[in-house]
Image (tube, rainbow, N blue to C red):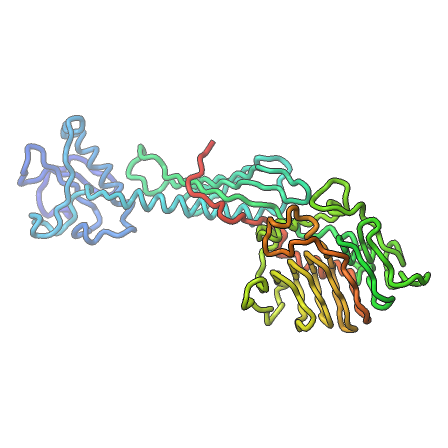
Length: 439
């Protein structure tokens, strides 16, 4: 029939099919829609036939108008196989419409929205000057409109919080021009992580420092030569005791000032304005609850038996978290970010990068080296301590620096390498949504 081998009365045609009156009608109006591409039955239809099916539906609608049944209603049907009364091995109708087309379009829209959200997080390398900020991306067969807006400003060392919304729209897979385009909206709450650390000194002891003896050294002279010299030691006002009464007792401190600590302000607890705690801008609460500097490796020593282990390799400058204490006898060395929620006794241990300690620090041993930045006593930022039951429930005393030729050396290159992976957007846990309302 589609080759002209059977005489038929054509009603209409388009690029994909033609409509003819059935030579053996089973109703007063019986029209066949014949695709110009040979498809034996609906069983042989593939996703690649989407454009063909659209053409079939469009022609069926036109034939209904021409035959005078468009307004009153009509039925579209497929006959598939002998048991359905099929007499010609050629697909004869465009009526086998399935909701899978709409489902496929929704899936496409979801993929476009997700890809748009991911692309925005990759290409947007800093917080936009004007918010809300909107970007539009063409992705595959659709468009993603992505909008970033701030929901909380940065306060007291805590990162600003944003909501990122991506609306994916797909125009394909519609059965007609009157069918709405498929749309899907995804959202994610994010924070902007800063890839540097406000280093106030090579060694900052928020809980103060009682020096034992005159050996060892702390130096604010940048070992890699990329930054200006900083203080070797930073402590709250009145919370430093030198190792002796000798005029040379502070000669182990190199930096600016030289042979003397830098006083950061009054001591205190929490984030009381004007104290040393606010001078040292570390979101310690965020570190403890896991929303900031999410660890690659976790060693939990607050349970028995303890869980986790130090990594075998430090190639990628990982974040290593010890929930509990590091004790004398722990034998490891590495690089990256070392987080200790309790006390830390570093004996003949070397670490390149950043060391953050909630409690007291003890440094001893000629082989002990921290090259980067060391901050201790951070638990004084937490009020009350019961917010995190695994912490020691008393505030740390002064960190004691033991004897031995230990060294804490400022190295801005190591600090940058340790924090490099965390410069960018941090996805907040349990904040991803599908179907965020569009204003």
